[in-house]
Amino acid sequence: LERESPLRRALSSCQRRPPCRMAVDESAANESCVGPSSEGAGKASSCEGCPNQQACAAGAGRAVDPDLEVIAQRLAGVKRKLLVLSGKGGVGKSTMTAQLGFALAARGLRVGLLDVDICGPSLPQMLGLRGQSVHRAASGWSPVYVNHPDDAAAADVELGVMSVGFMTPSDDAALIWRGPRKNGLIRQFLTDVDWGELDYLLVDTPPGTSDEHISLVQLLGATLGPHDGAIVVSTPQEVALLDVRKELSFCAKTQLRVLGVVENMSGLAVPLRSLTLRDADGADATGPALALLAERCPELLELSAHVDVFPAARGGAEAMAASFGVPFLGRVPIEPALTRACEAGRRSLPGSPDVVRPIADRILASTEMEREAEEAAASMMDGSL
Image (cartoon, rainbow, N blue to C red; front, side, top):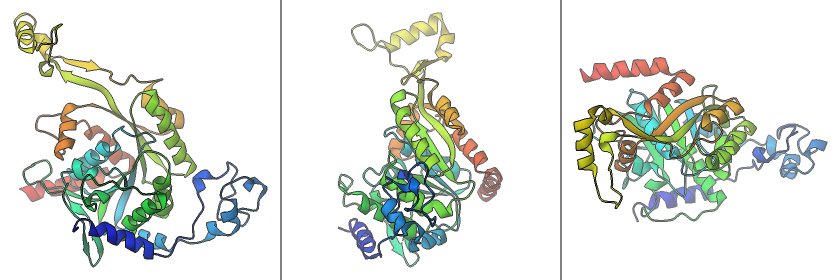
């Protein structure tokens, strides 16, 4: 009951709010839309057949949502806002959000993670925060902060998280909600969470181009600066690219800047010494095989086996990014150690490769935060002496 009360309070608060008068879905507008704020909105010949015609004609596009000013004030101390998007589920958006959060915070930057995947929140697990609950202070909801004193890689990071996963009565409880209720909670997150001063706010989203995404773009639109935007995640195969192209089209239609595309699960590389080898009957033959290699061809033991688990279709995510004229941030392989780290709620495991760091470096460059990262890292070093 104690963990359920924040969710009940949030929904109650959403219901008490005056309804938002903005009822125009700009992503569904006609190609020749004159703009919902135009004096000719809903009346021009190009408005014929548009689902927004009636709302625009009534002036909905010119109405001001009172929460927009509240959100702008809440996020005034946030330097960079990044939305992690993908049209496809299961491509690793939450993994990328969590690990980018760890990577940026490890440099001494102040990072917040907002989980708006209302029906499938994953960040509490991936940040090692399951079982935590949200606390309300006089200034609003307080994020839950990562605190792993036993983990040297995460001991000194400033990484706050907000998720509906902190509010449900149990980890297995399903939120069977329609769009308006989900949108109400997203609005509540944006208006009520006290992030304070942040270098980065990363928003983990569900797959698709639906209610949650439209709400985010509409509510955050006025707060987005030239260095804010979307990180779009895909895997290499066509079944994923097909849906991710729709996400890139959504960004173009809503004028959301795409900072770059990440190709996740881009091949599997396993050191030969780490492989389990089996004979024709399925029995484990690893020991004898490795011993034979060590005796007759030891140099082979220094190699890795590489498999394209998801073969890249027509050039994969890099070619897709080029076709849309957006940056390609790089590839992240299937790394078993990274999977284990996410399961454990950690940044990385000792001795494992930091496969997300190159992506974080490129994001720092594209958002012009390299100098701040260098200064924050130097401050961390000074503080540890």
